[in-house]
Length: 310
Image 1 (cartoon, rainbow, N blue to C red):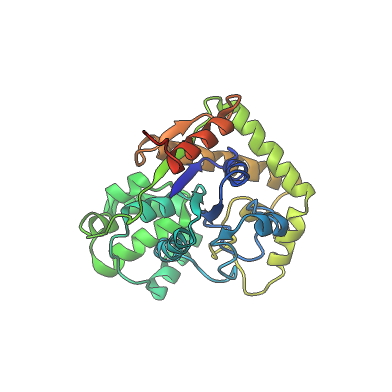
Image 2: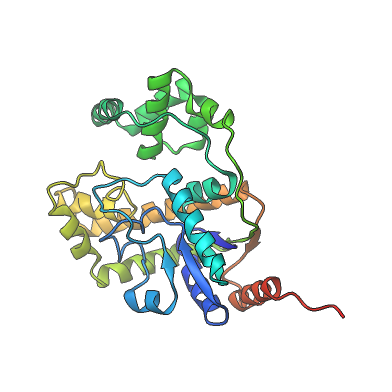
């Protein structure tokens, strides 16, 4: 299989679609927000015409009120990859959810099941003290996990605290002592890493304004109108959705919400690029270089159809 990852806004989907013009490609999404139905504009989900032209997998799997884990992603992605290969087509895993990608390639360590009572307890504490305070608590209980988790990453802080409170054993210990199996697939991996971060920042801002023009606020408004959705749901915590949700709840102006969303997207890109520096072996490519996509497409062709030596 082919893996194409990189920071948000680097053009991963465009590259994959360009490859599909010349090879029998099916795309497997590696995006933790595109799995939710109704999150279309803000996740840059491919439209119906694109999906009719190039098969896509792992989109629209869950209602926004539901959750979706890395373990579920590995199960679903593995099934999709086997099916694509059985059809004699080329699977291309595309996306920037690094936790999912690492789980797919390195396997998942066995972890304790979820504890709803503890999650509610942690959420209540976060409402009183703030997530940075809970991150500080995690740093005392599990320094190794806290070093890998951003101070505002609510979902991962909650899960790490849940595990240590439920079992008395840090989640980092569970992960390091697991017997996870590595991927059964052979893969070639590339990461889009722009050298000029200022250009990436401009692209991120431009893309978000285009999303707003395409109706992103109305998309979030429809979600906000649902009585069963809150900011505690992973779908609503997605970048862009969270900031516009705050605006609809009366927190600040629309202009401030847009600025917050762009800043949060840039922070996400920074975290993704940091992860890629110490990630699994993969070739880095600068998407801003002229002809970069065409050069990558030629590389994939060479891998799929190696020259015959007579």
